[in-house]
Image 1 (tube, rainbow, N blue to C red):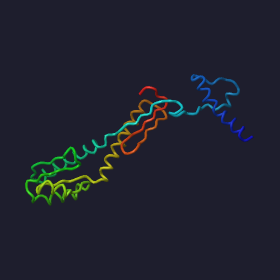
Image 2: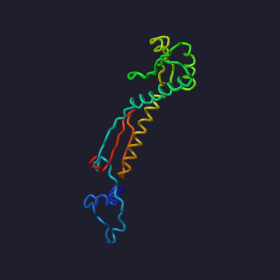
Image 3: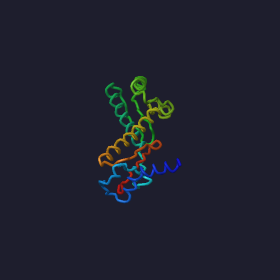
Image 4: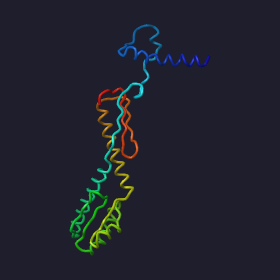
Length: 193
């Protein structure tokens, strides 16, 4: 008896959804029983309604590399302001390092002090510095900062995508982060991307 009552209740609440499948342009009439039928249909998801499912990748390595280049420029400006003579400052493309070649070894301690005080997101890489030579100082980014920069790049991409989709007024969208550098987008009811 309880199963029959629950089944009838389910059918009662499914009437607007079934009506929407039969006639998508249905308008409520004036018959007496339509006052007792629910007006809202069940919102169908991507699996029942169809739509678009996209998986996008974010180039987090590029974002991290650009952030490193920005800090290399800041370091260059500091060295110029402090009148610390350098031969070159470079950020190798293949490595997450900033390499400074000083003109003399005397300024090494001053540079390392600055890195410790103001560039705490970087650490002195003694092994790489020793491999390059006496007048070289190599600094590498802290792993926590690297995660933070890459995570921020993905969050920024999600926010940009969400803003663009919201401009079109697509309802029931799902935009989620998947893993470290992927974004899953589901747009129910949308046929053409």
